[in-house]
Image 1 (cartoon, rainbow, N blue to C red):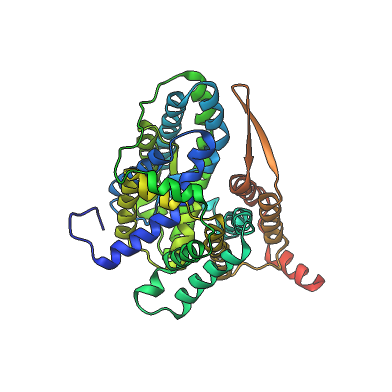
Image 2 (cartoon, rainbow, N blue to C red):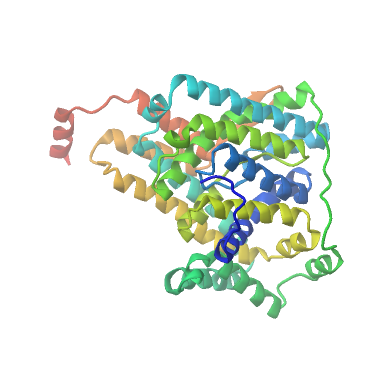
Length: 413
């Protein structure tokens, strides 16, 4: 499937709207935290996603959004050098993806797959989902009953819904939660005032980037971390959809597309736009894998960026509503990891497998962080990136168990 000018169906439009809304929270949160424009971030995420689909020939159902990995260095650069300098650093990070793409093309995907077997990818996927669980719980605990209402509406739509309603559980949950919020006065007066005051249409506050070696040295190295995340996201999406995206369209192409897409968002004055785990949760929950739907979602993101009023409506969503749907989304990601281990028939009677999985889960979920100093700035390798790196190294250095070793272990157990 490719980007085509054919008219989308009403169902695809609704599903695209749902996907855009599901991606909204994380996409807007990052620019708010680092001091960039949320409207530019939405617009940039939409443009980046469309560019990604164009470059990957519309084969991969991925929505690009603001990466959490870039928060600390981007915030530092915005504070010390200004938003334009941050844009230059993010463009340099995107350029590193082009380098990674060339290396993968040169070395081949086969060598990469040997360091990402199911015993590594399965628990890494679990870490992706459960690593985000604290975000969902922190949102939900601001108003548990509202989160539970939202969650219940999404679950009911997913299990008992008919036709289109069964395919849009997230949208059903968000709309139900928002209506209940309005009826019970949970939407803040500031949020309502912002909706009333915001114009219907208006261009985001774009600004051009500037290149300075100091911001580049601070931000660009983070691409090493997000490269690992990219590989994980592409593998996970393939697991959910039932396709091998590492081979078709190929990891080198997805890396190239991700890098250029990130550069396009930064060139507009937005944050980094890369693949991220929230998209996987939506795919797993809705079971809608049509790339055209995500392309429509990207168009909605662009429209949200150009409509302050629509963006204000979404920003007024109470945290409890977002927490309700996030509990389901992030749990779905972890479930995909469990399914990966199950389908690969990983034998946990092998101490080697137990060690690899244990290291990934504990270090990925336990809050472990490996400090890295770049240009005098302290960064951290943690979460999914640290778990994936540890799993890769453990898988490479631990010796494969022989049948004799396996038999002795079973006897002991």
